[in-house]
Length: 197
Image (cartoon, rainbow, N blue to C red; front, side, top):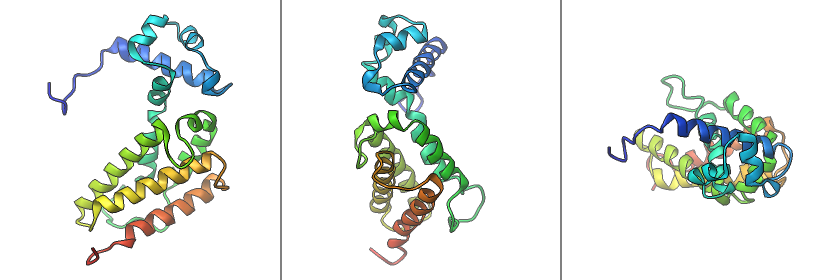
């Protein structure tokens, strides 16, 4: 099969990886990732160490996989307003954005391990890539100018602010941050409009 049409994951593999992801998240609910061991994760998941290493290189790779949902949730929350034909985003952020931020705050210790201040780290890299791709595709679809430039700015701003907020550098509750982020991102989209190059 082509890369665009990959084979579905074997159900047994998917179940095993799902148990490992759930186990890691449960372990990280009590302590930071740096204090979690492979032994604790596999014991909780009910699988052997060999099985763990069959699927993951180390705990960081498992953690990135376990946190992949936060990337999809972030992208979906930013675009939750797109439920109808209106081409213009609303003045206020979709409720899903504040809800996403509140849920993210609950797992802040784990996310801080993978999303470094400023937006770096494996989770930050993945979030930036997916946000940039979505923003670029949407600007290109409506013929907005400079889709690559604006998409990079939007992705960098969101990823960086989210990271700094999780690290305590941006004081705000989830709703206030959602409001500020929304205005910031809309300003970036509007900064280069039709006729500007």
